[in-house]
Image (spheres, rainbow, N blue to C red):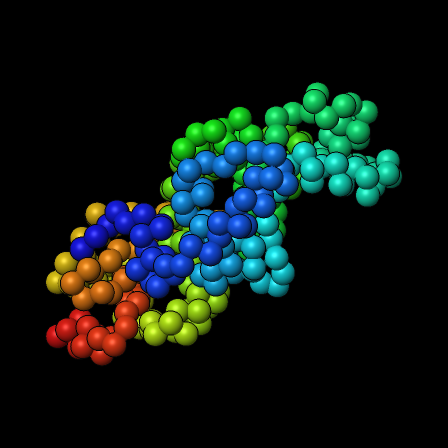
Amino acid sequence: MKYDLSALEIIKLLGFTQPVGKEWLETIKSSHQIDLPKTYCDFMEYAVDCPLFATSDLWVGKMKPTVYNPRMFHDMIQEVIDDRKGHWSNPPSNFEKCLSQLSQLPRDQWPEDYLLIGSDYVGGIGYLGIRKEDLRLDDPPVYWHRGGDDCSVWKPEDKKLSVFFLRVLTESLSCNEYDTEEDALEERGWRYEEYFDIEKEEWAASKAVLRKQGIFFTRLKKYNTNCGVKVYCCYDEERNVFYTGIIDEGEILLSALNRAEAERVFIDLKD
């Protein structure tokens, strides 16, 4: 059982093996006059327009219901300032107060800039970004800005971009909020089979079933989500099966994602 696959390895195993994002990445570089981290380029070369992320926190171009591409935070601020033309709410929010102050300053005196690479898809309450000065790093940290906060307030989200990719992908595969990913994978010959939804009192029994399949609960990498639950994913290379699920306060959900051997796998699970 593999517990440490990268996000790129996972999407390739799922069949997204065509490097469709080269031109997309070059457009971002040239339009914003920036370099991009190696980790970002390596992953997005295959993830651009990928339906697995159509309802995720990662901007991949074609999403639902529209298109979201990376952009610089300062460019977004400038657009809002130009759109408001000095007309702020009464009383103004912290964000508007910040914009009003920035509108009186040249851009080179604004707080540090970020490359926006995503947003909170479910709640729509903030942005995810990489500091402009960190774009030279291979695997930079990712930060979070809550909408309505002062423009300079960004908080750490993930220590590495690679971890952010893996967390977002794991949440997508768990179908925690949407079935978009399930539909996309079924079109490629995969199928989801829900195995169990066990309340906390029965966790010991469920973990025993996991161990029978070679899954060790303590080795699973568990990722927090904005919805307050944890998600996980591991891969059985011999059977070509992904196991994914959700861990809530009082229950654990396990599903298997596989191809033609789905029925055989679940007969084994239930033995």
